[in-house]
Image 1 (cartoon, one colour):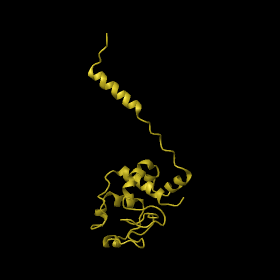
Image 2 (image 1 turned 135 degrees about the horizontal axis):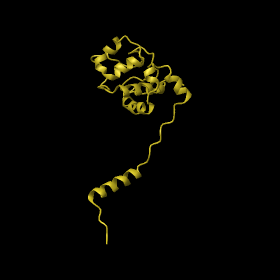
Image 3 (image 1 turned 90 degrees about the vertical axis):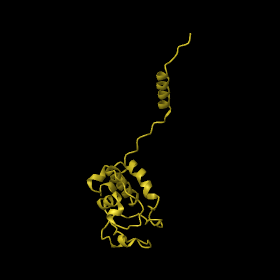
Image 4 (image 1 turned 180 degrees about the horizontal axis):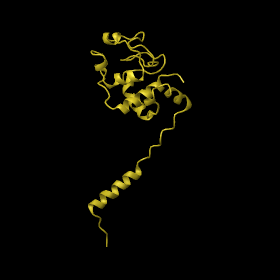
Length: 152
């Protein structure tokens, strides 16, 4: 005599088998001493950021920006050394008039405002990025950007 399983039991068994076959993601390694030192230069809100999430969100920036020291600009300026740089000042990049007139030096909080909605900070900007709503994602992204664009 064969036992019959209800359709609910079959679905439950399939879910269990599927869950067991998925690889478990390993936790990200803790930041090394150089990374910790870079993060310590940021305001407190950014120092314990989720760098893995930040790297994931940084992929959005990499669609238009380069991050490596000495790299040529792409659709947007190279972001190496952006922290502490006057807005609209990277040599060889053709900034919009609004960005050229923006009288700020980029720091974590100004970048946070910029990433929230670029067109609100610089009306008429050529940057087509709409913005990032999540404050946590912005904090994580900015921390990852700082680490990626600062010499260790």
